[in-house]
Image (cartoon, rainbow, N blue to C red; front, side, top):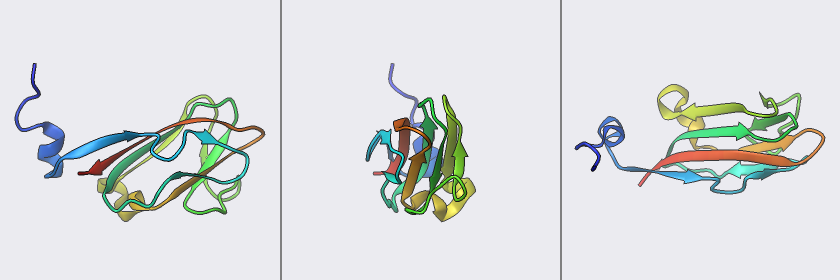
Length: 112
């Protein structure tokens, strides 16, 4: 069955969008790792820490346990939306894991 017309997400945004999964990497190390590139067309992102170690995300290479958003192990997450967070959603995002590298699940929605 086809999606209703207009597609609700497109109607809300006013333009077509697409979903990208792990657009840069899904592996986060114990040193700062870029997980999202600067993207002026991005309207939403979601980062989920799937690893067994706590981690942090931030907006530059200085991300650390005392300078970032905490993402607890085994499902901790953070998100940013253009509607709630404004231009914050378009900037690069960096991550770091404590103790050992791990896997993150990262999605972004961007204008096409």
